[in-house]
Structure formats: structure tokens, C-alpha cells
Length: 174
Image (cartoon, rainbow, N blue to C red; front, top):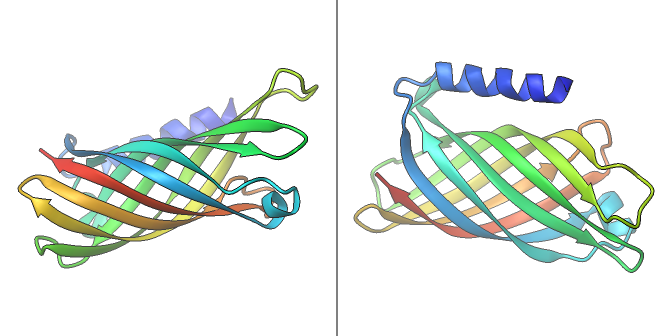
């Protein structure tokens, strides 16, 4: 329950710090997940997943608030489970308005682990954090191509739950 309270407090701070609280953009992405550390040691397979996000802003210091939702399936020979994540990302764009716009960002995440029914463990939730670097390329009018690389720490209490994610997607600006 404490994690939900923290999640809502952080979201409230981010939205309250926004100069204009309305959605500016919506996007979807395909994600390649590369397992690291404990995930790699447990022989979880690298895989594809997906996600969606929207943009609110501008916010603090010309940043935008870009919350999103994505999922990943962790699967090895013994069992599998899904991790559903709600991300609360701050993103800073450089050279905004140019055809090619690099960005950096970071943000906390709320991760919910949904274990298969044949396991004795209960489902679990964890607080995570991630760092982001990427590019947006203006395709035409309101449409942009989105590329990013994320370093994911699924559980801040377990430093071995890490992965790299490479995403490609599209963004539609209102």
C-alpha cells in the first residue's frame, strides 16, 4: 500500500509542477529487452514487448512529464512471469523544433510482478528507477519517430534486477 501512496504523491508533484496540465502527445513503442545480472544468470530470455505513453508539459526546467505503461515477460526453462510497469519519466529535449531532437531523462517506476498460477509465491510489486537517452525524428507534421535506450532497475532493493531496453515507436503531437 505504501508504494501506491508514493506513486500518487510523485505523480501529483510532477503534474502540479507542470505549467500546463494537459496531454500534448501520445505514443506507442515496441521494446527489445536485454537481460542483465540476476536476470541473465537465471537464464531469462531476451525478448520483445510493448508500451504506450503520453506527454504533459512543459514542466520543471523545460522538461516534459512523460508517464507510460509497458510490460515484459520473464521466461526461462523453469517458469515465467510478467512485469507490468507504470513509469513516471521526466524528459529533457535538446534542439526542440529541429527535425532530429536528442533527449535524456530519468524516472521512478512502479513494477507489478504477476507470477504464473503454478508457483507458490504471491504476486509482488516493487519500486524501480530508470535512465533514458534517445532521439525523436519529425517524420511529417504531428508525427515523430521515437528511439530510446533505457537502463532499467526493476527493484531498487535488489540491485541484480536489471535490464537494458531499446525501443522504437511513433509519437503523435496534438
